[in-house]
Structures are given as structure tokens and as C-alpha cells.
Length: 308
Image (cartoon, rainbow, N blue to C red; front, side, top):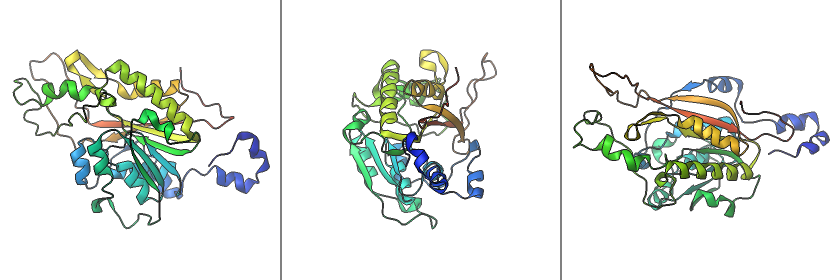
């Protein structure tokens, strides 16, 4: 998709213009998709309900449309039940996904649910590969400088293992979620390699390693989007964990440049819960949004940097 900088002088102006095209959007769609606060609605396929924390296919489709052209190769290192690969297939993009959970692999390989199809989807033949392996082994399967777009949402270290009793246990008298009728996401596996079973320090170390791997396998100019949500770790007396900022920090160590942060407004899908009461000396807001952290790999010759 991109060429070494020294070869650019050999191209005509028309070839250069085509080379720098990011996507297939027209002007109207480009502008509409550029809003920094977005809602992503639509039906929820059964397999995503079984996952418990999968992002909607409408989100995946929009980001893939923005950051790729038909025929590009999309990678998801934490594939889950296959939302990214399904969206890529519907839009005429090739895709590859890595997942460590065998049950999720089975669900991902079920194919595209009818609820996810629309009349506007491309009906072109695409290549899809779903690999049951640790994402830190990506280089065993993918050559450097071959990926056109990365889209993923990571497990949140051992958060679900540590908080399920505090936030989801029906016998906990002070449990603020008892009357909210919420379905909480459960731990994804017992595999010690699963990022969802790592302690915070190990999680950060592995994310840094993964970001380096993703940087190497991505072409110059590739975008790398991580969907993350900040949270509260009250068990450890931490009122606010700024996860999206930590992801940016770890990505920057690998050379990724932060270009945008989009807010995914989830207030329509989340129940409001009273976090405290009249006699409380603290007030907590319901966290009803996630972030799309949008990173990019510089093309040779570009001088974009992260802020200090």
C-alpha cells in the first residue's frame, strides 16, 4: 500500500494521489464519520452476547471503512468471537485474528450472523484466517510491513477475576449493582497466558511487547485502533484507572503516534446506578463511555510525534 520514501520521486502526480488515498469514502460520508463522539447501535448477535464484552459490529465496520480500502488486510490480536473479521469480510477486506480462548474460536468460526448483514455490504470474496494462539506469537504467522489496519479491544488484565465478587456477588450487602439488573462480563479463561489473567505490571509489559510486534508487522501509514474503557478499582482503593491514557503511553514506546481519541457514547446501553447516597462524602459519575484510541505508524520522512 505504501512505498519507501526514496521511491516516491519515480511516481507521477496521479500515482502519488492514488497512493495517499486512505479509504473509499465520499466527501459526505467522510465528514459524517469524523464526529469525535459517536454512538454505535444495532442488533447484537448471539455469539457477542455469549462473549459479554464484544464491541458492536457497527463500530468495527465504521472504523474499517475509515482506515482501509477494499482488499486491504485487517488484523485483530484479541479477536474474541470474531466481530472484526466479520466486519472486514462484509466490507470486502481480508482479515486475520488471534484468539487464545478455544470457545471464542468456535464462535468466531461460526461465520457472520444474519443480524449483521445489510444491503449495503460488499459481496466480494475475501480471505479470513482465525488463529488459535497467543497474540505475542503473531510474527510466526505474519511478515513485517504487511498489515493495513489493526482493530482490537484488549482484556483488562485480571480485573474481572478480582472484582466479580465485589461487583457481581448477590450476597454482598453493599453491592451497588444488586438492583441494576446488569449482566457483568466474566473472566474469559484460566489460561495463564491470557492477558485477562495477568497482574497489572505484567499486563503493561505484555502490551508494550505487543505494540512493538504490531508496529513491525504494520505498513507505514497504518492505523492501530484500540477500544478501551476506563474504570474504577475500588477493591484496591483506586477511584479511577485511566486505562486509555496508559495504552497511549505504552504504544508510544513502540513508535506509535497518537492521532485521535474518539468517545464511544454507551449511555443508551448502560443502566444508571446510584454510586453512593445522601450521606456519602464522595460523588462518582457512571462511566457510560469507552474510547477509540487511534494510533498511527509514521511514513518514512514524516515527523509527527507524541506530546511530552
